[in-house]
Length: 446
Ligand code: HEM
Image 1 (cartoon, helix red, strand yellow):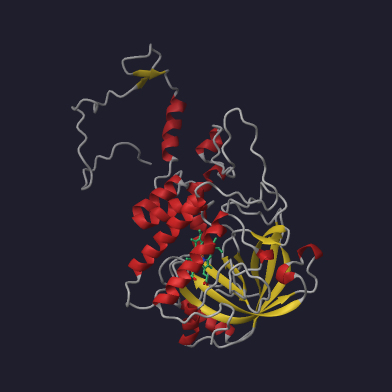
Image 2 (cartoon, protein in one colour):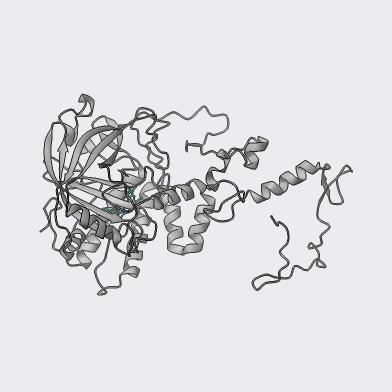
């Protein structure tokens, strides 16, 4: 391993002239001598000097970089590696993520633990939401200049397929979970859109988060979004989101608007977000019907706060096909659903610990090993032909939103609060630009 000054003189480097004041190589010194005249500390042992070099080598300079070199695969979890300098030498730093709690003022008592399901609205939240909506619309207008093709979703623009399904509430739902659409055993019609994340349509060979949005149809009762007659469950193929809260998201969003360099800067300053973003985009994903999806953010279920998840019931293994062309995920999906029924189980995880299962920090996974999920419904996707291009066109006319919901399933937390207006605004914009007639969101698309 080489460390020290780069003397290659390659293009992009500059001459460091040590004759200039302040550039000399006299440096500062650690000596057994009085302080001053460049001496700033005691003599370091040989071991301490090597430790400094090891420390320098352990600092990541790029997102996703493997450090220490030749060390763990995952730099963000370097402290879990017994060879990691800080672990070996017990410096007291273990880089572990502490769940965000309101900063304590000196002398103040411990901040109060939130109650189960309790939301906390940070100062300035409305302004953050307004700014995100504006930035999103500005980006869409730039991305899709008027008249140049249909405006796609700002997020998850690529549809793998839209399927008709049955959402079957089971007759053995535990009593304490019998709320909202899970109040009694019943079969609902549903539509499910499988999508790829990102802000632009990309080849399926590029790693990215993947979505499963369920729209349960024919929902009676007062909906949280006026006019909606559906209960939607919007999920991604990873248990946590990649930012903690709306402030975090706003910082990311600003970076997104300023280009790649700023995004890297954001992730350098936010290693836990970098790790979650990497994981979220890099899960093995070769068939949308053979992987598990999670809500990532919490929701109400009657008096409880929950997260939900859809897990495939199958012995198929999400194996990578031999041929992976840019739209291969649609192809494998069309093929599978064209030849067999597909099943998922729909699960909920009840919040029982407000600290280990926070409502306002969507980077913290509610650990399944400690807090298990329970099955409340089955999803049956009967064998069907979704190969026609009309299948994709129909999906474009639709809107899925966490806020298409009964009050018993109200979305919780700042990320979800923002999604209420953002999804609606983006859908309205798409609808207007694409000249799609207004329609009730529960209407089954033809
Ligand atoms: C502040 C955070 C978020 C923002 C600003 C955001 C924004 C958006 C927007 C604008 C759309 C397109 C809406 C439309 O045109 O109909 C969308 C779709 C989607 N989002 Fe988010 N989102 C956020 C968080 C999340 C989270 C936490 C999840 C995790 C489940 C998620 C999953 C999805 C999925 C799966 C879709 C596609 C839905 C469909 O099939 O229509 N989003 N998001």
